[in-house]
Length: 305
Image 1 (tube, rainbow, N blue to C red):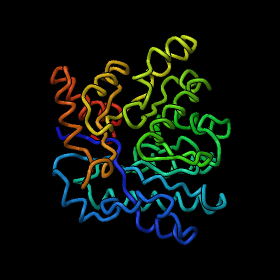
Image 2 (cartoon, rainbow, N blue to C red):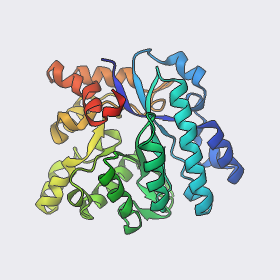
Image 3 (cartoon, helix red, strand yellow):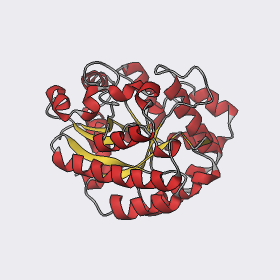
Image 4 (tube, helix red, strand yellow):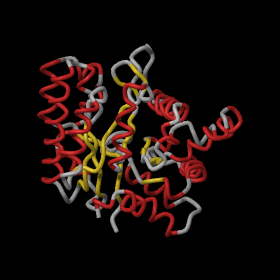
């Protein structure tokens, strides 16, 4: 079975052009969107290993941060149609996509789940951001999304975004911090206890959580500390087998999924080879390594088999 990368990214050209019409400075404020392999599938294929199948999420440009709600909803719906078409066009490279949603509009999120995710073979979940509309992901405004996803058995991909209140956001540590903070806020809000079957896949191996496991255990109520282990995590830390070992020990093999953040991280095409090598270096059975590389993804997402 081929490796399944559960957390890779694309930039949808039509969606991006529509966003530039709203704010022409996006590429200045989010310079990473200029990575050539986000939108140029010819360049992406040039560096593809011919084996790894990616689950792709639109690079994190949230329409709600740039325009009024009705337009934001329409942009999300159109982006998802474009994403589905991209998956169909490159089925050998992309196993599936993850839908973009307007987080402050649960009625539109429900429509996207019902009409785009559940009725297609190209979309397998929704992507949420750690903050939206100036609010934490754990704000009551977004609570209906977790209920919707739990009831419909739709996994959530949790991606960090910069907190615009901070003047020193950076690509080295900010997203790991924002991911950790969002996980804490979801735990403290009781989301994982309220919806015990809810699947939330977090980026960057659960960020700071495995490293600070004892701090979590000693400083939070026992039931909240236990909730952290309910998240699913990817392996997108650019290799580093010792750090991956911490993540596997903390979350368990069955909650760790191969994910690379491609094409970001290591030039020119991301860290796919480095992360695969790190997984192979873990002191795990071959069966457990295969679980991380592909079987956990197919168990969690039967639609991709």
